[in-house]
Image (tube, rainbow, N blue to C red):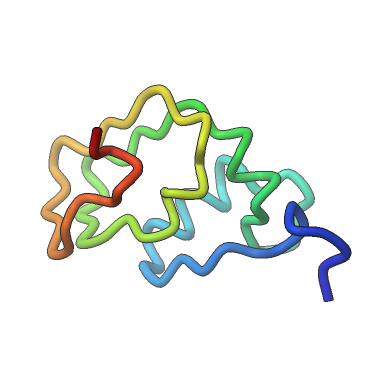
Length: 83
């Protein structure tokens, strides 16, 4: 059980998106993305990954750049991008 909110793991249902995040942002190599790890993400380039959703991205509160040019999202845009 996580000791605090930052150690809690984020649910990322899309296996391709999760694999991308793990490859680039899993700092402790535990096979999960924690809230703390997600909050360090400033740039995501998931171009050409054929993603259908990016659920879990809303935890990347410091995200400044997102490149998903060839992504065909089947769900509405996460609220993090709505202003």
